Image (tube, rainbow, N blue to C red; front, side):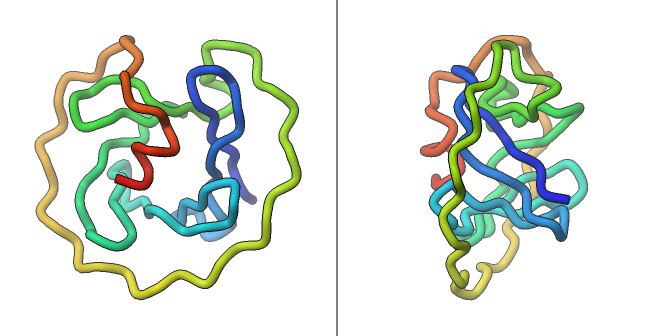
Length: 117
């Protein structure tokens, strides 16, 4: 089952596809993937952050995205998704970062920009 991820304003920004690993932006573009609790860039293979208890954390341990159950604000009605695009080849996975202390602070990064970084 797909899982919608929201930004700090409650706007649907991305979703995890049915495989439970591939992350698409709302426009259908593949941008990242999950391995255990780590989030990696699709093209570069860089460890972007972590997904823990329904919250996406950036590289500094700040909250940048949320599942519906973890979103700190009411979520906005979910718009219709665009068709999924066929992803290019996945880049080689880079070394994993050491996970920082996870914070309740919200990241300054926009969630969509974070996923595309």
